Image (cartoon, rainbow, N blue to C red):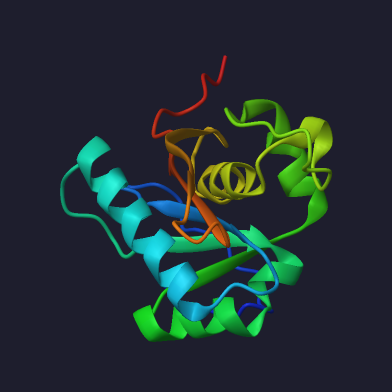
Length: 162
């Protein structure tokens, strides 16, 4: 999979017999440290491996465009040699009804939908033949409460062409 800069429009490759990568949606406060993101990333990968074990391509990070371009996220991706998917508001909004976590304080997405869950689902859906994804790890909150992560996988079933 090609690595990309947070400013690049990345598209996941079409599904093949190769398992799809985990798409890890990240949300974080502006004051989040690299350690905050590292910790929640590690926890998300461990939880995802427990849900869907086996060899996979490297995970992909996904978030809103502004967060994807932040220095802390770019540093995280560079440190782990991961691709970042920068998602626009329309892609995130389209997944708002599929998230499992809602918070009344959150106003970024419709209905207080979790940004990290919407980002994981939107990113994974890009690589799915059906254009659909499933959440395998709902929102996890880092110990310092500065970052959140969720993990999704692309649905591998083709849409019925009838």
